[in-house]
Length: 524
Ligand SMILES: Cc1cc2nc3c(=O)[nH]c(=O)nc-3n(C[C@H](O)[C@H](O)[C@H](O)COP(=O)(O)OP(=O)(O)OC[C@H]3O[C@@H](n4cnc5c(N)ncnc54)[C@H](O)[C@@H]3O)c2cc1C
Ligand code: SF4
Ligand code: SF4
Image 1 (cartoon, protein in one colour):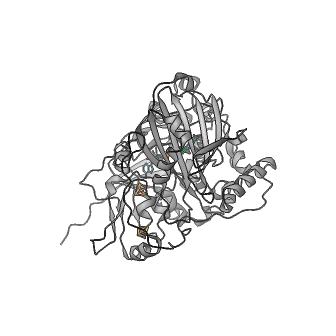
Image 2 (cartoon, protein in one colour):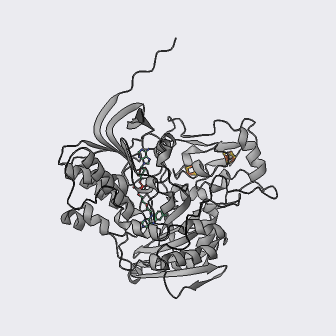
Image 3 (tube, rainbow, N blue to C red):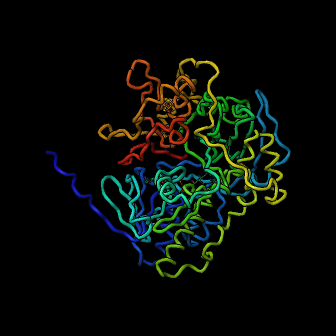
């Protein structure tokens, strides 16, 4: 006879925040400051340190910080150089054309750059000084329910009960998905759609006069049918942050974001910018970009949604940090009201739109319009901006990334990892080394394919797309294994969650790893 499982330990708090990114930390700071110790606030972060799982561009629209921080905290906040020049380039094979103007939403001149990890650690310092209890290396696994009310989370076998739980898990959070499954009335009219952003930091020969240069690209190597684009920011005399975002609704089963990123870096425009450089950091993360029609309701009994978890990214300008702060503040203010506590003087009236939501409203159909390809999407985006969102009218539905694939016309040759081609063009294994991955062997793997039966059909029909769309080569063909055609190298996982969206059979089960396992992004 086996002994019954011990009853889980249970901790109680007034507010539990899940996720130590800009949204979660902003919420915690606002709550702790305004409640003056009357509310207990616990924040859980799955990374071993705040910022370890954060990746962004990043250029910040900083106005929201003024609502969050005191003047002293604002002065001490680690902002980088401001954008000095910004250019927009169309890329073609072997050459590029610089547009004579930068589209209004893409103009960044005068805005500050930042290292999102360092900035989050500064916010965590403020939160801690105000009495917030931050627990790192602690993933929330699932929601606790009291009837239809969220009552906290389960985490590492224990329970944390909370009068209100704030979900700020970032894009495609499993807890937010659980919430929307149980409360479908919260869902937005359109499903959320995502891009995968792959980013590197490159150390280059120092050039102080180039600090603050910003370059955006569209076109090659992406086909015109695929939404996406690149960025290249000179963040310090000897540092360049560069990234490529590619939409996950690609219909091509050969879709390989890491290979596209490496090709993009070989374009002459990028080669010139990166000359003499060496890659020092690598990571990948999702970007929710459905926009206005994909925004779920952010409030339900016992729970609030904030930041990317609520789809709050302005895809047209690739910015979400300011919306993460604003929605964190919004969540905090609504909790203060619910608890009968005074709200700060600058609190928005209940139900009022976020200050920066106007950009999303004005480009309601922006992302969905790209279903017709890049030229049509760009024309529609311009039209929407000029007519303040009146055109195109109505709601264009989005394409679902899981069901967007068309079958392969001919069998694919087995995927071979592209070799390491020097300090700027690393193969996947060398790239992953720069993500500082740690997974404890004693922990059970956080990725599984419980029923591999669909994989055989998928291999034939789509050539096992997981062996290409994962930016960390976690999925490999395993021809010698009779039980499953796919081998999982969970120890490579960057925790971007692409596989939870793109597997055509929804065969992959991914859970947030415990004990701070995963990457430790530095400077990303
Ligand atoms: C390539 C790229 C470039 C970008 N460029 C810009 C830019 O230039 N400007 C801009 O404003 N925005 C930019 N963005 C968007 C911006 O980074 C996001 O909108 C913003 O970081 C969202 O913050 P968040 O707090 O909602 O989520 P996140 O920053 O993702 O934070 C979520 C946190 O929750 C933690 N977490 C998740 N699940 C759990 C769990 N179960 N338990 C405990 N902890 C958990 C994660 O580890 C993470 O630390 C960019 C994004 C990408 C990917
Ligand atoms: S895990 Fe999904 S994508 Fe990979 S082979 Fe199986 S069904 Fe296909
Ligand atoms: S296994 Fe999934 S979550 Fe992990 S890196 Fe690959 S696609 Fe991202």
